[in-house]
Image 1 (tube, rainbow, N blue to C red):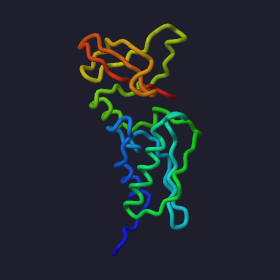
Image 2 (cartoon, one colour; image 1 turned 180 degrees about the horizontal axis):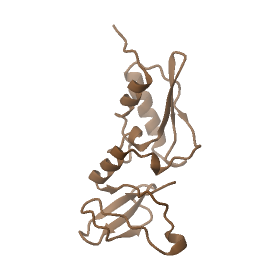
Image 3 (spheres, rainbow, N blue to C red; image 1 turned 180 degrees about the vertical axis):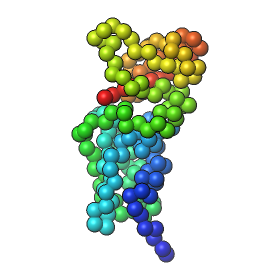
Length: 165
């Protein structure tokens, strides 16, 4: 039996198969939570950063990373979690942003929400029709990392992946 020789690039590609359990159109690579992959002797160390420190999906993500590596004969050290630097929505790939939009979730806008300071609401385009005539229904959506919006043009509700800087 021939065992595949793994390198960093091949492991990054393999991790493209690990989906975020809360938003299944995103991979852990698209989401930007995989921070590094390093060879340590004959093993590999994968380092991840949670989207926020209390994210309930992180243990599932760790387990999925460990399982896909084990299934592919990769000798893996325990998945390492680092909290600094803190995850930011800037780390979501362009492919991930497009996948969110196609799935019906508005991707994060690349601006910090200053509406609390200036009383100007952030305008979030509708992922279904593209209208900028939308309103926030709730700061909290189906998961803690999303807010709930509604489009005033097509009347469709949608989630917005909150921008974190």
